[in-house]
Length: 288
Image (cartoon, rainbow, N blue to C red):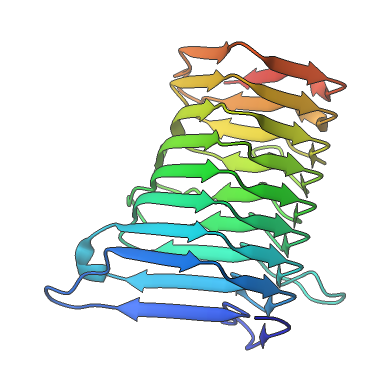
């Protein structure tokens, strides 16, 4: 699916495919899956999801499981990347927005390359409303290369934080040889993550031949990852190289915890870090 556009001002979503479901009464949307599909050079003019937008209204009040597996997303964009345009949009390739929330989201065996968003999630963004939960996010054997978030954070991947929900994501697990290369975000003082932006997350587990290289947060913190309010961060069997946060904290990882909830940041065996840089903390920066 290639070179499609959703250009209606203020409501253009899902340049390649837009799926909006609404169930009432006892109806429920329990899961959504996209398998073995290719999306190239699609555009959404507003809201987000340059290639794919999925929104579930009510859904019987039940959180939804979402899965993207065996797919390629290349050169898709969500608003404000064309000269003279302005606005906010999330998910240059994919925006998933079930208003009752998620039970879990799985991104597996997929390629995200050269996608961009006006605000967060150059490749993928997840969003809920109110106090709905994001459940767990699993990223396995995925490649994120050259994606850009022009706004606050998450050059590759963003979990959009509801204003009244401090810890919407229960678990972030990145495994199975996933690679984050040359992703970037504009960043602001309170955000960042050249590759990954999760402003509210309970536990983080990164292991299994992972690589974060040459990612950058131009004006925020966390050259590779920005993590908000975790109780534990565990990293093993991973390479971090040439990630940058020139004006912020944490050339690789920024941990921000307003309530000082961080019990531990554990760097386990087989962690290699080289040529990372930041204003404070070339590897890990912690902020209250």
